[in-house]
Length: 196
Ligand SMILES: NC(=O)c1ccc[n+]([C@@H]2O[C@H](COP(=O)([O-])OP(=O)(O)OC[C@H]3O[C@@H](n4cnc5c(N)ncnc54)[C@H](OP(=O)(O)O)[C@@H]3O)[C@@H](O)[C@H]2O)c1
Image (tube, rainbow, N blue to C red):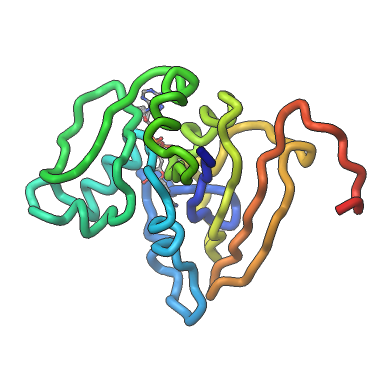
């Protein structure tokens, strides 16, 4: 299993503004060559998200009472593992499996589902941090939007130094900067600058 945290972020590192606002993301003008998350999502074996992200999708893209809206909105993200302490509504036809508690307790279940494939860590940032804490975050991909917000939900609320992150690629993608980082093991060997 390879775990990839792929998300959009503001330039100053927020996944969402105050009140889980994503308007800054939808306001970015579309341009040729812009981000194509569908291609990535189609390559994943499963997704995982937290309760606030799930609530946002239900509220804005897949109302549980609209038949088919879940599969239209989250196509390619099946099954979806949902970390929550609650019992939220599950749209008809959606393969959503509820998990709770430490990420490390569920890695075997996730790996059994995903096999050699990709587990898309959708967010939020703290859930991605929980995968990191469990030694189970392999890659971070971010589409950085040309926008800032004063407050909101942080991209990754953890301390992670340059010894733990390696920039793999940086591309312009329409009005976004698409960055891919490999997450290095906590006890990895020191790598002198310029030896790649
Ligand atoms: N910019 C983007 O592309 C992008 C991507 C993803 C998300 N978002 C947005 O970013 C925001 C993220 O919200 P968020 O930071 O609050 O994160 P979140 O991970 O979506 O939700 C956090 C909640 O998930 C539950 N949870 C997390 N870990 C758990 C665990 N180990 N066991 C059981 N329950 C657990 C808890 O809720 P309960 O205890 O209430 O169950 C927790 O309060 C949302 O607004 C979302 O729409 C944006």
